[in-house]
Length: 526
Ligand code: XMP
Image (cartoon, rainbow, N blue to C red; front, side, top):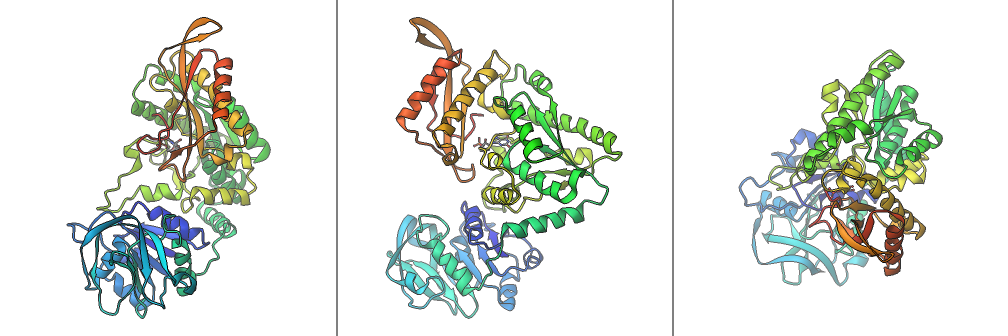
């Protein structure tokens, strides 16, 4: 694969994504991984990512000793981007220091070498707009290097030592604000480094089925929680293909699902996907524990714990049925979760769980002595969708908006069991989503939903004073849920939806639209 050594840049995910979009297998590990972890992956090109540090900072993260020797001796090209380039320069004896001026944002660079490994002959001509974000810069080149491009301010923007196959870019080719960045990455990887572009979903599927078959012994059983979302569904269909009905799926109704969700999802699982799935209605037990609980984190923890309880009761049932207790838990973990759970030291990046405790069945494998199977853990969401398509998973699953594990509980601030909040929210949400579908907007929006606000508001309907509840509509666009922008609805669309909601849902007399991006808000309200 192309191997990315991560030094903590916010763009590291993006480089991985972009290169995978070129059908090149790309793997990212921490930049401070030991040399054997790097060499065991047998990389064909290594990219050193950017990062928030200065190479002069105490504890500035670096690749392991012997790394450059390994790359040189094995003829593996190394491309440093931003911090990665500065690290390369410093370790090879060049000089990195604070530049005359910081360069943040869109900048113009000029290619100063006619022949270079970054810019195809067509792209070499003239100036290019690129995205920079750095304080330090390269002030002196190591031996054997030449400057390939400079910014208009005169700072070094691209360097290479062709004979040693060491390269550096000060700017970020992976962001869309560098319009020719992708083309130059493609040219560099495919035309210059000769990387093969044969990574596709058929290979992924075949490899994962082989993996699952070799992992799960001939009479071992696997359990899996299905949420109705893309990841767990695709993971289950894949494993079902590998081991048949030794997979046992569970769908939990936690009382926090959307309008008729249980019926709809179960019908799809059984009729369309032929998955061995049972449904457990645990709504009473979840709602009983949530009664009176206001704190968002406590709510999330309770829901997580209850899921674990339901699973603990499920395993003996499987054992009763098949005469053997399950040995594996299948999870639809994706690649970003894997990277996020091991931020490199010094990166300043924290685990996303510190913002919200995302619900998953994290503690379960140890408690129940289950081994984990995670067949999607090298894939991004869009790749999982492609794999799902390849597995004939219906579009209704693949295109479904994400829905959080804690369900409607994070869309009702405070006590979710108070009054008729859950039912009101279900009705409003259904009207909103249906209107989005009718207007042909569902696939343009990353996620849309309604929020119930547990406060009284005065209205007037049919000449009568009303005292009802406000609801909030939220629709966002996003690449991966990490950042998000609000979706700009047409005025008429909003007018129609608001009127439908106020006319059809008893108890609601005011509708607001949330137009906050993430950051500063998060996607969900809790
Ligand atoms: P936030 O609210 O953190 O949401 O900006 C980002 C994305 O994650 C979803 N989300 C969750 N998904 N369990 C999940 O499986 C959770 O606990 C959870 N909380 C938020 C959210 O819907 C959005 O897509």
